[in-house]
Image (cartoon, rainbow, N blue to C red):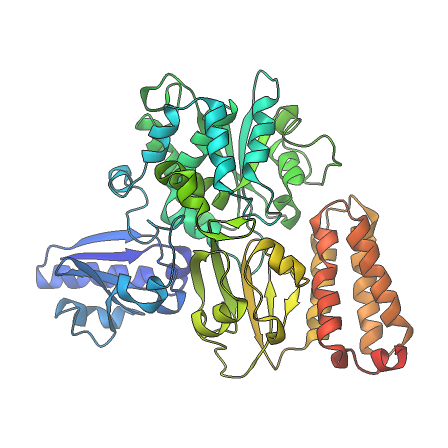
Length: 508
């Protein structure tokens, strides 16, 4: 009997290890030869732990599993009380366009043969036959943009590093996924680590970098374990080292764990931390593409950006660019969280209306109450309301509606949410996580908390002061931490003025 069961951190948190132990114990009790394959997650977190059993050539899902559900699985998966049918036929899966996450939940994350059997390494083999400029041109033509938050064109960054003269260049993967409600980087690294390694190798070939680093937050012990094992296996198989796949072209990499500072998700803070310095923001210029890690030209890309590169080279830039809308090309892995009926990771082409994501894909609120707001882009993203639900999910489109895509996390709130308290949380979050380098962020966030407390107390003068403070932070902060902290505050103030109470009324 062959069973696939996630070892993804979310599945483990929901009891996957107890289910795995029960599967092995029940197989031993019945004398059944069990092949238990530990995979990543399919992204349907509300169904975890999700066991899969092959029936007539299709993998059928059963979940959410508990240890008590295991004996019935051996009596027949199709007749199990929690049987879901073929996993690929489930509505959540059928509605997706899975490119970056095509293998996640399907393969053994640490099996290179499994990876290759599902299309892995095809992109790297193609890139090895291309000149560096051709590699960079392919990425540029695909329209791939940074998936970490800024949405900067990946090809432009690579072209800058390619053109820089230096004895050593670097590829740095920003895996410091610190936004609450986001988990795509973690899922990818735990479920399909070789695609990130392959993407970094292609990046190295493209810009002339022979060393790479993955900066991974310490709060992700499972991802660290899987990535370190994957790098060792890749090196042993000749995927990394002095001669990548026997090509004579070198690229090697290693995993570095950060200490959990949110600001190290900003690329220059990350580079300082990687160098062993305090994780504080650097002034720009110079840009990291010119003077980055150890003062050398450096590509700094997010996990999802680099992990998408292999599929671009496997299927071609035109194939990838054919998805999406406007300047938002390809697919985006949405991370749906908060008060939702169905939370998880959903990969789709850019352009799906926000309302469809919230009402159809996520199934509305878990509480059954009306949706009040959706925070798009992490804890520093703006709140968007049902009146804006026709907004297509794309960088420029969401920006035009007063929000930001960020890392594509969506946190849903029902009509019981206290929006003044949520605005206060944004300022408090910024105050706690600020690196202290610039005054607008370091002092402004502290004053923001105090000012919102005055608003709560009914101080009329505090509303105008709060608006001025937000503008100062937005325009004057060195990085996006202080610059974006006003977004949830001003959007809450705009959409829910009545919740700012007597102070708002007096100010008007």
